[in-house]
Image (cartoon, rainbow, N blue to C red; front, side, top):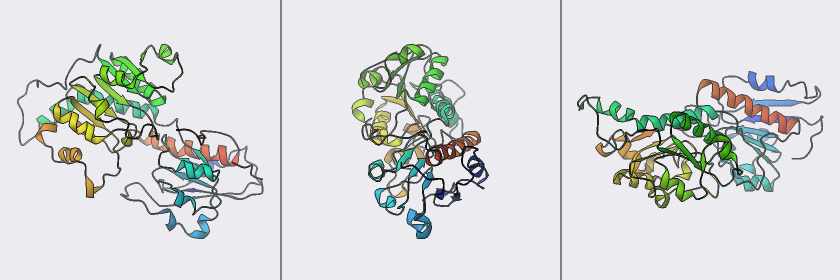
Amino acid sequence: MSELSNSEELLIIQADGLYPDDAVELQILKDARIPQSRKIKYLQLDLFPTGTATPKPWATIPEDLRREVDGILTLKMYFTAEDLELFPKLKIIVRMGVGYDRLDRIALAQRNVTVCNVPDYGTAEIADHALGLALSLRRGILLHHDLQREPHVEPWMVVDTPLVSRIRDRTFGVLGLGRIGTAAALRAKAFGWRVLFYDPYVPNGYDKTLDIERVTDIRELFRRSTTLSIHCACTHETRDMIGSDLVSLMPRGSILVNTARGEVLQLDAVEEALRTGLLAGAGLDVLPEEPIPEERVHSLIRAYRRNEDWLVGRLVLTCHTAFYCPESFAEIRIKSMETMRDVLVLGMQSNVIPPDAS
């Protein structure tokens, strides 16, 4: 991104419309390192506010405003090459989250628009959520919860099911050992699981630091993991990566959890493995299409919604909310605006995603 003169006026927008005011953002823009002569305008729009099922298109922003935008903050919006044409002055876009697959990074790179993310929010919450899904399935909590409700209350007794098994000395696999994957691995280790991971981008020796096992073949991870938690980003390399060829390698009676990106895991493979009993259960916080398109609801989701007998207690869906608590939602807001300030105004390289990153 080119250097900015102190006399240049900047316009920053938060596109979605997530917050009741702009007090936090304006306070961050009062940073003492910013020259008082610098003119910065910040606006919150309303393209995709919380509680709204579908977003307004970027083109609904008035043209005179679009033509002046230097920086965009967005949580849920997609941003395509066509959208980029609407913003001739755009210099930086900050994805208010870890993943940046909603942004057309090829088009942005060609226009020399800097792309940033916020990799250091919600780490604990998502790791906690992944373990919560795994534990609620593996200990039969969800199963008993469903079976003890009318109209068909089951006897007050143990249930013979492959869902429930001892945790200690079983194998917890982690696919992707970034910040969240590491946090999940440490939590699983504390519960007594043997932990192994696959991540070809993690430097050698990191496994020694955590005292966990590394595998160099993704197929070995699936073959050995009786509970497997997905923590990799959605990239050209990982999109649709996990299909029946990998899921079918898991030991019979396994648990599969995804709190990363829905596009990484094929729902057909999950449904097939649940129907055949290969998977005892699955916990999904993310789906390939979000929100669920009502005109083409996947057969697995339909069976879940109908509470079909074969799936009772074996599948749990949460609505891409693993990151959420009031504190983490506030943290996204703060860290996103700090990143925008650092890169657009102060010329730093905070959380910049290189154009050639996967």
